[in-house]
Image (tube, rainbow, N blue to C red; front, side, top):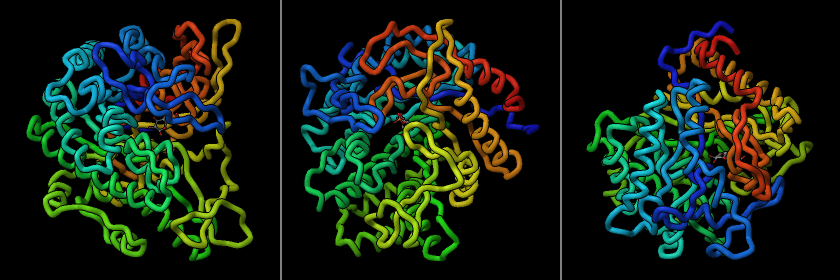
Length: 479
Ligand code: BG6
């Protein structure tokens, strides 16, 4: 396609602190909720342990040692042509337990150095405040985000870093994939979003909604404070958009898809519109869920709406109510089940591959909110083979990215969706969030490390490196 992407389009790459940095206990850093997640595997869940237990393997403790190797990595990012790098700030580097009066200067200095190095190499930092981690002590002391005492602690952290980096960072996001805890069924997401382990099933939904509402209040308060510190800041939310399609044109399937999508839109509806939507109020009433929210907090939601919507897109889902289709029943939509889509294939981890879904998301989200969008994650986790010549021929990754970028460009060029940038996930191989594997690789830069933690940590360029280089150099014309 002959694309005419905007001249200032932010082609970039994305990582997150806990999946890349390592150095989990250096320079005054406190233990983070990511430090107690063991390695799982493909189809094997990660365990969340009570503190760090001897004999368990915690892949995030060292990760790819980006903490010490960022200068070398930034040289590779520069060679790739990245205009921006999305990463996050590890909250427990700044406030080791979350409750200190004063921040940890060594932690602040680290991000000063990192952002300076990026800028010196022409790469703009795009920063998430909380990417699936927070100080572990906030779990121990408060039981996580369902407790309102955590809200001011997050806002204090946000104010500290907004102030410190007010001249170094323009694009911020508050909570990574805040809506991933939406159904509360998946313990890992409840843990990483909200630092909660909920043993009583009957309490799960209410607690997850309360934590989500508290995070939305914390996010709004942070937006308000950030704008006071630097009115030029662009502060966005970060959503995981997994559009759920109706399996058939049966009206009941369409309605089931509307309800399934609502459940995920809830978070961006509040971030953007600044109020709790009526559909969720009805749902809470039906389920007998009481959510604590004061009039002052409602006013914060109204005043602290976001400037743009950052989102990840990896896959779509499909829902049906038809008896003849087999699937996994949904708890909150009676009579419906999640089914597989016969028109699309899946990755080795069973993630559906649906490039057109990205164009669909860009269109529907822009139509819903009328705000600029930013694709801050998209990518293909795969098993790579390192050849004897020290090469990785990852044509499957190139195909995945090419097909998604094509759809993205259609959305921008043909449909007129305002899009700030595109930062493919795991631009350099990092620890997988979901499985804890190193060998679920997304990168264009290979990192020599395996699932058990062995390897030299050496970096080398995969075939996708040269491919993405020319995509950026041609501003998306040559795919
Ligand atoms: C997103 C997260 O859910 O997906 C990332 O924001 C994560 O942290 C990415 O790594 C890919 O998931 P996974 O489980 O393959 O690492």
